Image (tube, rainbow, N blue to C red; front, side):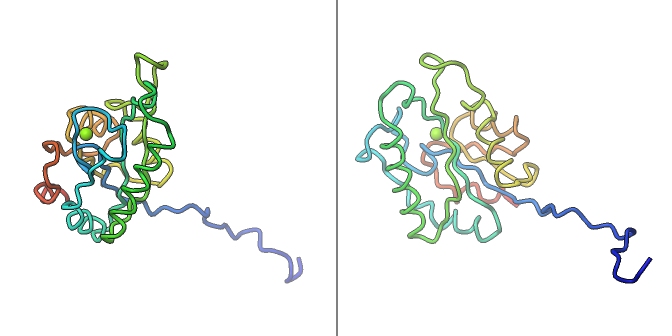
Length: 180
Ligand SMILES: [Mg+2]
């Protein structure tokens, strides 16, 4: 064996990233924009709750990735298009971004049981959260889901994430003490 042969005894650590992300998942309507009582179909009716900017900034500064998880069954019903939804979500991202808050991703369920086949992502099912957890290497046990419906908490629990139930349009600052 000569010196320039590779040493067969060296083992290399696998190149996996073991550092897990922690996230605060956010429902959309009634949490990030005003609850209008039904699906928001028009950008004119999409009123962003900018009073939540400081609280979200605080969560971000604590190291939480912010991810939206929202049921958008209005798509299945044909009440609005993916393009109109994308326009609303761009406005949402831009408005929070102007306040220094980065919304990392928005996961939405486009299905509705009366109009499409069954799915695994319409809350209270955890599919949206599970997709996000996979995509961003999130540790659910370090993560939270803030929503204004019982189904948000249920989806969170099913994904191993702690649910925080707020009233519709309640300031997020009022529940920050639940988050470590
Ligand atoms: Mg809601």
